[in-house]
Image (spheres, rainbow, N blue to C red):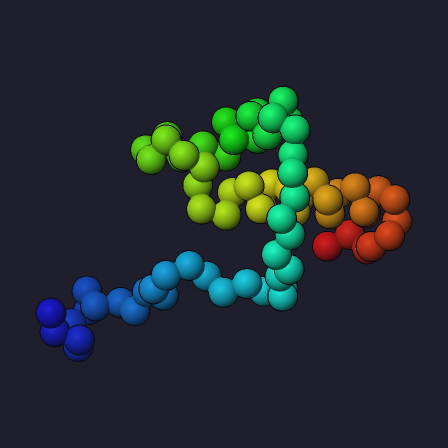
Length: 75
């Protein structure tokens, strides 16, 4: 492929970089809570949760709760 051709647009490769630093937590979740989350995050093609979907979902829930409690400012 010719790098000077108009069809050769540069696209980022891999997953996008995190805008905020992250921390790894290993937590245990009751199965009756985890199962519906797995269904919400399911990638229908791969039949498993999409990469990062659970983290995004849980992060959103925590952020909303902390904003409601006025422990952090709304983004």
